[in-house]
Image: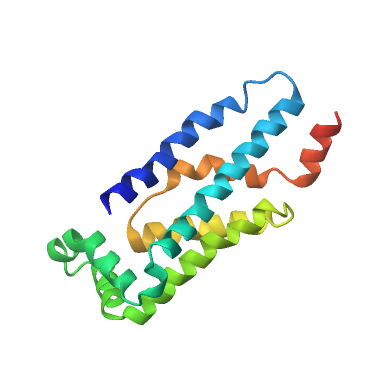
Length: 168
């Protein structure tokens, strides 16, 4: 568990190393190549998380999310039992089927980023899914993944804008 947390946090910091490199080249073609590479890294970030859930067997265990919630929020549950978020988390822990459906939904959402490797026309949809994931992860898991938000810019850059830069 600790290893996966450390490994996952490396994704946060590595994007701050990659993102400025995109703006270093003088010509637009090299810029677009680096920008596309950063887009693929962003997609990989989510797809690899879904594959990790699948490989570790969490998707086959209906009580996985209840256990994760209990482990993640044990301090909140014991120190602030009357807080609205504590009550919400406790409800999810006590309803393993509902919490599992949230876990499965998150994994499917992450896996949906796989389509970005093959089709760029769904980038706007992936951007919306990213925002939903970001907000739900903050609400349910109390983990703010806002550090990765700059990489979402790679989904905002439309296909038409990519083509106009590549033809110049």
